[in-house]
Image (cartoon, rainbow, N blue to C red; front, side, top):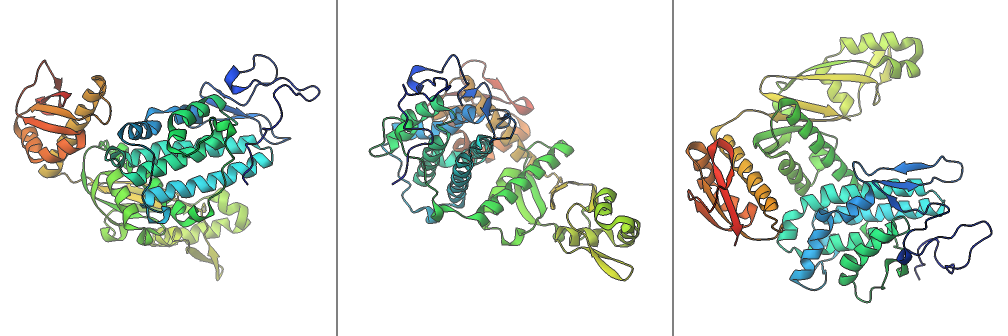
Amino acid sequence: MPGPHPGRGRPQDEQAPGQHHRAHPAHGPARRGRRPLVHAGRRLAVAGPPGRPRDAVRGGPQGPADLLEHRELLHPLRLDQRLGPGHHPGSPAAERPLLDRWALASLATVTDGVTQALEAFDTQTAGKLLAGFVDDLSNWYVRRSRRRFWDGDAAALGTLHEVLDGLTRLMAPFTPFVTERVWSEVVAPGLPDAPDSVHLSSWPQVDEAARDDELVAQMEVVRRLVELGRSARTASKVRTRQPLARALVAAPGWADLPRDLVAEVAEELNVAELAPVAEAGGDLVDVGVKVDFRAVGRRMGKQVQAVAQAVAARDAAGLVADYRAGTASVTVDGADVPLVEGDLVVTETPREGWTVASGGGLTVALDLTMTPELERAGLVREVVRLVQDARKAAGFEVSDRIQLWWTADGQLAQALTEAGDALAAEVLATTVHAGTAGDGTGVEGPAGGRVWVALA
């Protein structure tokens, strides 16, 4: 039978000699004595195992408690409670979309890691694992699943509830007050016979059936490619909202990536087509390569100069291709010398019409060629952003249906007319009044256009 949360079981009025009193969550934080493991500001203050200095874990710009309370993370389930009872995924985990299976696999990995860390009294490692997972959940799973939440997708809502259930229990010893509120408002309503408090629930067990190390590794590649693609857009000053015709990708295992994950990359990068870099036929970048003398010198000693000369004599593009595939080597004094990760410094200068970003053995190249169709699609994306901002400014809920009015001329009018149905679906508009002004001044948009919104 699963055991209770770590550290529970001792009556509140019993204290070991020299131990400070620790407040019960219902009574508020202790004012004196040793600081409890609670979230303070934007930091999750935790101590490492015996002998490791006290440290603090940051969850990016926010700590895990901040992110757990984040509206984007909890709102889908609060909304579902208004739409219908319970959270039933409707299908076994193995049959759900890859994004759901990734979330459940990540939860299993984090549950195992946090449990082992706490058993070793290593709260620092446990805190880092939790902070990273909450960031992944909020900034990837929830964001990528937002439309499914709007549509009331049972698998998405059920998966999010299952993950928040396990995560809330894992975080309870660290952030007792936040997790208690999340438990009572979001988790418990979807559980039959749920305990009254998260602090009365059992410690989560690792779901071995949900573990999928291959899927977790593939999703990591997907996210790294997305980051590189965004970097490439930033370098070329092309906004993410501007659709592009294609992106070329070089990554280990790209050919084996499931189609659903390839679609995730294409949608995140806002490109119509994804293809391997090899399809560029060598016309993509000018490649330069040289030895990292410090890395190779540690391994090769006095032979580092000979290795550098052998690298310089090789065709740069071919050598880099072998290097990224993990099969690169050069011949020094008649012997093959393998080149491992970190041995080479690769530079890639994009040719005209392309922007390229590389890192960690991965490359993303974006075709910057613009067509009138792409330009109109970019204008529609700008209007979508404008309408979403207007919804927020008006205090609408993310699920509220609206009426939309717009006025525009020229290319923008053509773009909005062509994309009328897609625009309505994107902003949850039940009615779009094309070329008609609404009440008031509205909001100014791109190319002199203007939009108005109201609840449907």
